[in-house]
Image: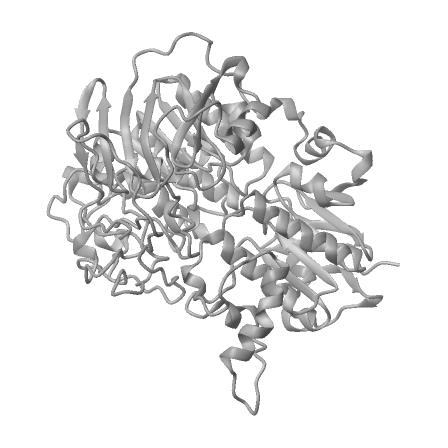
Length: 637
């Protein structure tokens, strides 16, 4: 007997066939892993199961009956719940209100917040989330929001639970909480369809694995009768050993291109020493939230910091992204949808964004040479093998892997000397991971200094020439050569290494997950002109790279912040005046000066809330050059 049977299902979009006679089943008390590269058809299959789409041919049988006139509402009523990588929460409502969104219990038409919170608490405990049900969702870090999404799915008492990349933004403890829910549901006779690009997760929780490639089912394997290499071969047609390129020769690095001494970010990290050398890939390892993110943001001018920075042996000051770009430093943030891309704009617009000055004659930003832009965009699409229906396709319509390619490709024409990447392969398939790994190595071989943060231990070991392990805001161990193994990296990450090599880090706290569960971090905004009131951080972390370039040249709104996903926050914080970069640059037809971004779905991001206790220790007085965050920014108070 099966709970779900997908039988010979096909689906096409605009003549492009994305599913070809796909068949598989899900049994009671089973976890089925659905595996495949981005673009393999996984999301389309799940959309058919949940009623978002209808098949062109074939049928879907649920609980022994073929589904007809299927819809998300009917699927949920029938016991099918889903959790996706893209959140479906209302950031302006409370945790409890989101858990029962669309099904608020009421008495005589009135919803009582106390009753709602009481019903939400058991579900939050079930997913391992210790948070006040009355907390506004927009104040929670991304990982905790994902657990709220899971609690929301469990509120429907599902018989079939679909988890589509639901663990991509979670740390290890949160992933284990999800696994406990999955196993509990399976033991009670329920069924789970589990999608993840993390191979270890697939083998940790699934009973069978169904592999999709180019819209077709390649095979279904029992977990105990297959291994990682077999699954990867079915997915991409190559061995897992081909995933990582060869490393740099084991010789002493040359003179550092960027030297960092005593870098400290309040409540995040202290006394960080790094040397980024041409031709080398340096990794920042450690458990999530040890200050790695803030180190990269500080080096790009997005966080207030103290310390000494040298480029080519000369002291420099990086207080804003504009100054970072002048020094040919590029930054690819971890959240590509809200920080790395302008998802409401086209692939063409995103790829041209960092290069508008060179595409405008005589640096007049009101005019762009369309022919030059088209050639540049076509070259980048071909070089990065970006899969898009056309350059005018919206970035939001791309797969996660192709979005990440765009976020990285837009920097290539600037010929960066230092490349900063945070979680460069999160939520993307193994084939795209391989392409990105080999690209980073080619860039390093061409003389670029690369700094990478990642929560994937295998990624750091396979890609990096050296890894600096961070623990409680300080670097505690450096691993290279034969010492750089997964075992040694994990040991240093969880124990703090052989000893605190730099600083105590006792008071360091990652601003991403503040002690009270609020959204932390400095939320530095690089545009005082673009922010209404300075009552708090504007909550927009997406920086207009055009504005950060060499001067305004008379263009209106040149210092504007690109924040299509950001809105104002609490405590008087206002970021709703953020300017669409393309309109600020005069790209939009008829755009005259900066136009405010309409962000009806924007998150309510409050200013950072600092934990109790003293701040992290900074560099000794007089020994560090004082560098501040971006102009107009407000650090965590």
